[in-house]
Length: 85
Image (cartoon, rainbow, N blue to C red; front, side, top):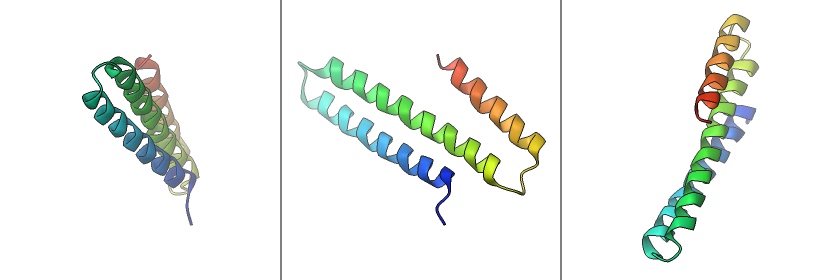
């Protein structure tokens, strides 16, 4: 059964693939390089968000993860997100 974490990891992989495609386009098109690099960064940021969501969902949905540990994971993941802004 596919979990919410699995779906988020799949979404992260798609975003990484899009970012890689943008990097290739930037390397090919000097004129539009800045736009492709910006798009690449946005896709990498989106992938990171999906990866953090997967970690949160995994901790929340796993009955074997104690609530205290799930809260610590959430605090760390949310703290990581705040530090990226």
